[in-house]
Amino acid sequence: MPDVHVVALGGSLRDGSHTRHALTHVLRGVEAAGGTGEIVDLRDYDLPVLDADYDEQGDSAELAATIRAADAVVLGTPMYHGSYSGVLKNALDYCGFEEFEGKTVGLLAVSGGSFPVTALDHLRSVCRALNAWVIPHQAAIPRAHSAFDDDGAFRDESTEERVLTLGRRAVGFANIEQDPATFESGQNKGASD
Image (cartoon, rainbow, N blue to C red):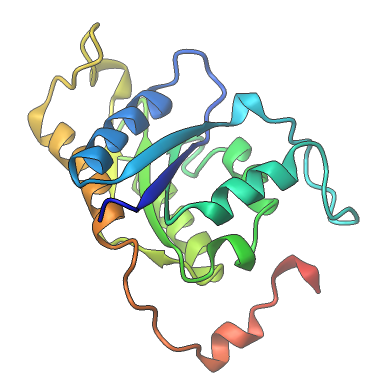
C-alpha cells in the first residue's frame, strides 16, 4: 500500500524522549510495509490547555489537520501514574470524530518500570470513544531507559519486532473496511454538546 501515510504522535516533551525514539522505529516498520510516515512532535506546537469555550487555540487547527490527513495514526506515550501523558491527552482533546472516526490507530507505550499496560488500555478506550479502529497489536516497552543501545538500536530483538510490527500493521490495516454505524456510536457526541 504505497499511498498509505502514517502519522506518529508522541506524548512526550522530553529532549531525550524514549517514546519519540521508539516511534522512529515504528516508522521503519511503516516504510518496510511500503508506506510513508512522519513524527508529529508536540514540542513544535503551541497547544494551551484546552478551553472548550473556544473552537481553536494556538496551533490546534494545524494539529487537527495533520491528524485528519493521515491514513493511520500511531499514538505513543510514556506511562505517567499508570496512564498516558497529559501532553497527549491535551493534544487528543483538540481532535474529535472528524480526525479519528473510522481511522486506523496503533498504540505504543513506554515506561521506566514494568509493562505500561494501563496506559495502553486507557488510550484504547479514548480511541474507541472516537470511533477509531484500534489495531489489536500494540507495543509496550518496559524499562525504557535500558531498552536502547547508544546508537539507538533495540537491545532486545523481540521488543524491536513488536515495534516494527506495529508500523507494518498501521499500513496493512489503514484501509480496513469500517463497521456500519451503531446506535451507541450515534449517542457519543463528545465535547461538542
